[in-house]
Image (cartoon, rainbow over all chains, first blue to last red; front, side, top):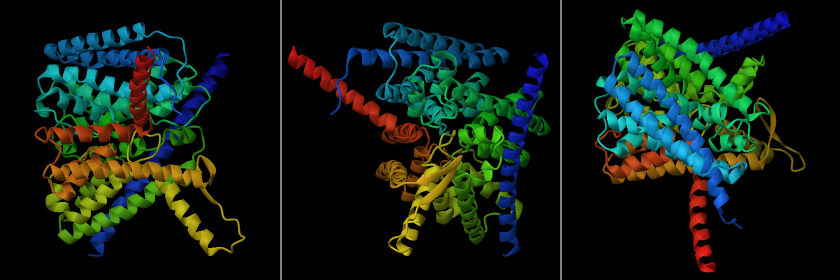
Length: 45
Length: 507
């Protein structure tokens, strides 16, 4: 019973962590695109 | 035909509003403890008095109108809209007791701005307020972002049949789970996990910037609560400019973009459906509008030669634009910079992104990316219909968690809400112009209030006309609750008076 609970908790923790990392990675790439646009504007000046 | 209002209707509304008020009273214990930690005895006393008053009002209200009846849709809408007003007034008490407000109206403006996650403020001498009051300001915005009713649902109301209806009245219409209490717990779980991560990350950055460790994590918590709830408050009057730290700005930007996502999207991603982030209509809409409008802002700022290099352009321009688009309102430039340096194009683009706003069922405001996506897809479908043979069946689709067929009803509902938002933006701008402000400035601050953003180009300050303060408060309240529950409250009040008159005539 205890083993099952621990496994369930670990699965839930892993899901939460992966979910959070996916979101942060997406937002990070969006911010990166923002920087790229600023850089391109200065390059093309 | 509109039904008559009976005593039982008032009981239901009074009982649930009382419970939400008790929730607000309990919340005041957090800044009280903060004041104790920092040995701010006067501030602790302010919060003790305010908490006692709020708990008393809530308890009396719940006791007098005690009922076992379940709220219907009308009650739910009235409870949602009414609770926000009661919370606004009672939450203003510690502000007034602190001596930092010019009037009680200003205190109500600030608390409503906090609850609606707008971020405009009229508070005087912000740089010298107590840590307790600072905690209260940020807590208001954090709780407001999740929804006061969501908080009450989690801890006080439980899973009554009408609970989901109350939540809908507060603009959280996504049914993620069959049990409404589970939805509330889920929203809070995601928010609290991010609160822990955000406070530590921002606290460490604050320490690296030279802030004392004992204070750094409070700063981390304040900035996180402001960012995640797309609120826009900051502990100092210079907002994010105070920190002079690009790491702080980027970390905060990550959290306010995350905060602007639909809770249903967070839930889908955290449940393992990670591809949803690339397919969701709101995210697609947000990405397209953000990158397009940022290109326009770059053009405007480059033409005027405002920033000397790409890093400065990105740091100020992108941060401000994302802050506007997510309806956060955190700022790393001075308010008048919009007028003096950004110019007409920069201001117009920022106004447009604020008007569009964040995702539906998120902590953000504006008319939302989902509605924007639906309307654009609706227009595209209509054009496809015109170009197709007459017998062809053309249907539009959009993806939000799963594929939806785009019906005329869906497009119409989205368009109605967008029109209502535009209407409040215009009304606020007209009143601003009538008060003597230039058109661009009046429109900028009006859209900022109506979309619950909080950026200002200098109009919003304690010295602004009282009429404009009231109009902005109405804009914040209506914009946050997405009109329906506010209109229901007005209708309920009118029907109550009519019912009373009918009863008098019958007697």
